[in-house]
Amino acid sequence: MDSIFVTHKAADAIPIWFVTAANYKDVRKMIGAAASSFADAAGFEPKSGRYLPLPGKSAEEARLAGVLFGLEGGEEARDPFLPGRLAQQLPDGVYRFANEPHDTRLAALAFALGTYRFTRYRKADAHAVKLDLPQGLDRDELTHIVEGVTLARDLINTPANDMGPAQLEQAARKVAARHNASIAAIIGDELLEQNFPLIHAVGRAAAGAPRLIDMSWGEKKHPRVTLVGKGVCFDTGGLDIKPDSSMLNMKKDMGGAATALALAHMIMARKLKVRLRVLVPAVENSIAGASFRPRDIYTSRKGITVEIGNTDAEGRLILADALALADEDKPELIADFATLTGAARVALGPDVPAFFTDDDGLARDLMNYASSENDPLWRLPLWRPYESMLESKIADTNNVGGSQAGAITAALFMRRFVTTKSWLHFDVFAWNAAAKAARPEGGELQAARALYALLAARYG
Image 1 (tube, rainbow, N blue to C red):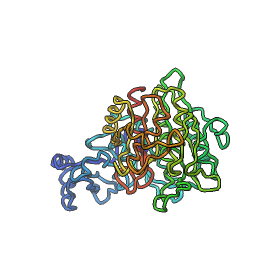
Image 2 (tube, helix red, strand yellow; image 1 turned 45 degrees about the vertical axis):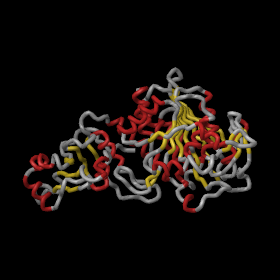
Image 3 (cartoon, one colour; image 1 turned 180 degrees about the vertical axis):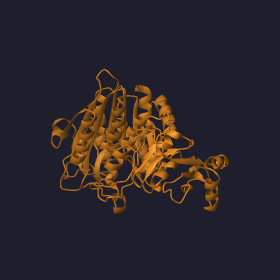
Image 4 (cartoon, rainbow, N blue to C red; image 1 turned 135 degrees about the vertical axis):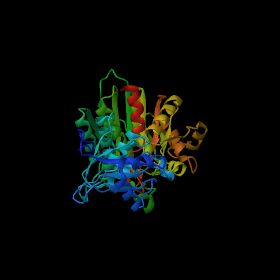
């Protein structure tokens, strides 16, 4: 994709003035009396999200003289992504920041993310808005992040008829090819032969064969970091079928896989000093004669027997086999991403993903980066007493824990398949139900930018 950030300083870039109640008097002096009078006549006030294009100095001058954009007022004043609104409001052209917003780097990132449009099935009018980056910002770094977010959004927004397990594998192969990473896939009945029974059980009823995608990159001497992404390309709920309202957006149930691939792209583009592995169990949870059933019992890759309490709790099953494989390498860090539970959304809403870990230091660092990157996260506890909710009378564990603490019991279930202390589990929503600044309606990348910042600090 072409970068929104220009590669050279544009002498004629149109200035964007970020205005607040505190600095509006000074800004008025800098834009001049004529522009200030125009702003007054237009009724402009320095409030959050207010936008005003300033006309050229003469009737013959077609280009804008500048843009005023308000940053203060109301709840959105605390959103450093608010400048992301500009990308959809501005006419074509090259722009620059004439003064500093609250956070210049996040404002530039938001500006770029706000230009996103999903155009695979419905072409949009070309919109050529570019940003002349402020001095000191790393163009390549911001571009890699924007590319990662765009990749995730595109994958999540693509419907299941064009994003089944095979197509998800192809998307992973494109990422691998770009960065010269090795990649392989274990497909269909090969999953049984190579001891991935839970992935096979969940995906065997679908027309598209289930698979485990395995990508590796980096020097073997570097610390091992493994990413695992839930790749349920569509989730009917299986025999415990979802109601239509719950099934409508289940094309996004591979949002965890999209997150892992997006983060992998950022890591490889930055050339972090890690031995990276990405595992994506890719399935479709369909209904057919071969569907797995409630009360079935399967022996997982790790040897733990699992009784199926609900076929709609399939994500944790495929992750269990993938996490067991990840753990066999004894990496320094394992992070998994999954659109896993409605319980996490009830607790924290759609914008704040839950995460779980036993590593307190890792959790503190991650929360700091979640704040600095405007990529919100909140830690929930791996509360061991709730493990009793997962008890089965005839197997080692059940895959569901009852009607309470669903996000926690799901995390506790997966914790049984990992031995490393530095394990992170992210329960993400991966979706914007309504458009927000820099975050259009539809698929969304969550948690990856925060973890990327942490990894870049550790391994950059």
